[in-house]
Length: 207
Image (tube, rainbow, N blue to C red; front, side, top):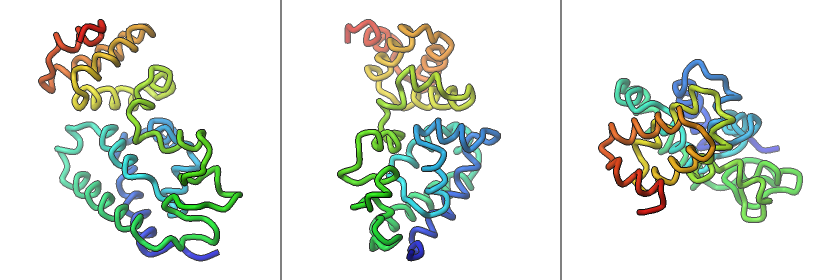
């Protein structure tokens, strides 16, 4: 089998620098669950056997506390470097492995379970669902996360979602009796300057 390209190796090293800084103290298995992927897929990214979609790094930013990124120059720089290297790696020639493309092209039959390509099964799409907020925001998914990851994700969502989106999530959390989670989301939204009246109306379906 051929070696990973230099671009893929460079991204893998950068990713290895970023990941331990996000949710420090949380295990790699728990971080994988927070991203909505399997531990094996996370390992592939770390070791340069696969490339994630750009949305994975965006999801990691959401998991990192805003104060954590603002409080350390290194983390912000590491994120920016990883994003640049991922873009370069995904543009590089697809020569990672015989019959398997690291960036999501046509994969060999035996590798389809870990591929991102167009003919991958729908279940494989869940492995890249960290880029899809709708997937990550479901109460069922949130309930599977460790407390630290769940709180960090909800806090960052509250600071980034629009009032209508926030209201929809508040409604879903309320229906599932996830009151502490709903409180974290609302406090974050309020601290980010969101209109709580609009959020309440959206939660009631009156937006």
